[in-house]
Length: 558
Image 1 (spheres, one colour):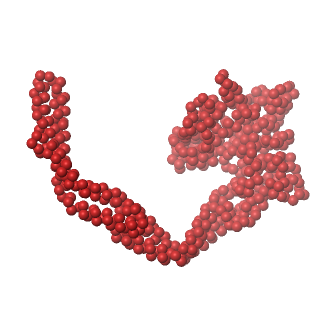
Image 2 (cartoon, helix red, strand yellow):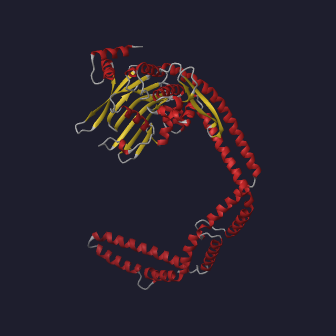
Image 3 (tube, rainbow, N blue to C red):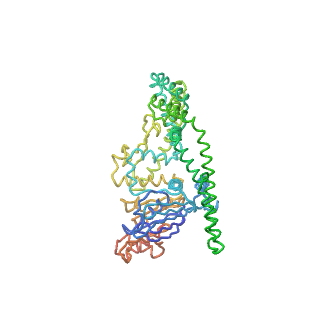
């Protein structure tokens, strides 16, 4: 569960430090006060991508830190990913506690940390999937999409892993099928291709080009072709340095001796004498290197013909196989690989066996998933139908129909949500019969039920109760409070009926700084302050004795 949240310079939040308890927490406040910014901050710290303007105007960096009691599963993930899991067993669920921190510079650079160690956005998202689940205010619209209906069914039934296994098996079967089809299509021309590739490989293997060889022999040819000039120049340099009549070595020695004699009159010349000595040593070393170079150069005369011959051979092979001489080694490697693929591709029996095996694997996994989905569909239908009765849809019925489809990555069927507004009616596709209000209520029922099946310890509902009111709103509050008995639940709401059900009540207010800049502040409400907030939600800007009495009555309800 979420233990604490710290925010610095995030959107319009200047500074905020909050601690949270278990159970059901409500967040209220005027429209535009920044209630959803707290949700955005949590999603930001758990790896959601964002924009540089997330940094509060005038600040250089935004920072969000969140501390979680992450339970045993997330603690195991931390250990497997190589992060310090803190005091193992310190959490309420026997797991570890984790501090997630993320910063964002005004220029767009983001940095992430898990328990003080650098992390990637992908790692934050992986961990976040085990810590937090957010249900957005427009999420019910996704119920009209077939893919979302399928995903909700699998989530409710705990079938995510079998569904992923089916998708993987389908990919393997599809790849094997494609390989077999390509091999069969290429069989007629593979013999001619193999002959051509075999000739190319044999020719280049005889030549044995090496990676980088062309650049090396070109450089060697330039050196050898200019050998006479190099030899003459280095010999002249050797005479000047060490072997001539008046060499640089002897001249430096004379200068050093002359300055050394003067040193007896002025010790400050000692440094110059030392520098001249160093120069003599360097000249002696240069003379030895020149001598070695000249000696070696005199033995290089027979190499030029060999290098020219090699360059000619590489040029000829390049022209023959329409390839730059420098690319012959790579051409040999790719041709060998292509020849090997052709040889494998011609083994149609092996490819057919692989295609059959992967198809059988897929079919077995997909049929097992279908059986599990049938059970999950019945259970989900019963649970959503039961919730609909409490949400002012008495007699309504919800069904999940599984429609057979051709084999696909998602399995052998697609899920379709059906609804009937009254007991005697025929259930029809959700998109065709549900009004906006009904869709919102059905979406809320599915969200609460799906959340109950989700093992994530912290659930956030961001204004999912929009479009409802009265007794339905009171029922929603009760459902969320019941859910909070087994989970940590947060709900951003405008409804006093929902807010009064919270175990903990936070309010968000927006004010203006001296310079006219907006800033959002959050505080925990207790006692009379909470009564005043519920009264404001009931009566608007004018809080009367009647609305206060009504607020107290709502808060006193069990």
